[in-house]
Image (cartoon, one colour):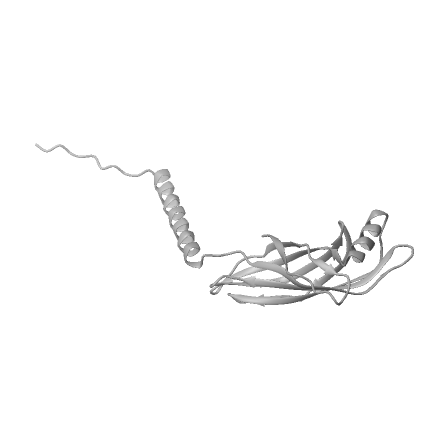
Amino acid sequence: MATPTKTRRLSPVRCIALIVLTIIVIVGLTILVIGLSVKPRRPIYSIENASLHNYNMTKNEHLYGNFNFTLKAYNPNSRVSIYYDSIEVKLFYNSLQIAFNNAETFFQPHRNVTYLDLFFSAKDVALYGDIARDLKTERTSGAVEVEIKVRAKIRFKVGIWKSSHRKLKLSCSPRVPAYSTKSSQTSPCDLDL
């Protein structure tokens, strides 16, 4: 005579755990496949041109001057485009902020180089003690080293998908020729994304 066999049923907890595990594996594989097919790379930034015009240091050590820079943004990705939705730029000398501006927003397609003009106007900026003396000394030597800090809200676009906003931070330290007869050198920027 045959013995009856017991059929083993999954408990609801095991069933739910199996479904969750399956979803996690599918999502993980999807992210892996997309990541490998897109191969995202970090954008590359540098300051290409730097100039100083209408420089004046008053007797009571207040700075006036117009600083102009060209920021080169290179997107090396073959499938990823970038939206720059807001761009805030600040100019520093020896950790003292001397000017502030907002730059024009733009869209950067994949494998593209975009040049962004940055204009700063330092008006009646009080410089104290060593900072004023250091600026005068650097200008006399022919170039002034400044720091440009850029903060931007960006979004990435791959096909029809757009990411949520991310914060981009750049720090660039170009040497600005003190006189218009000298040319500036390319200065790479540090990226924090």
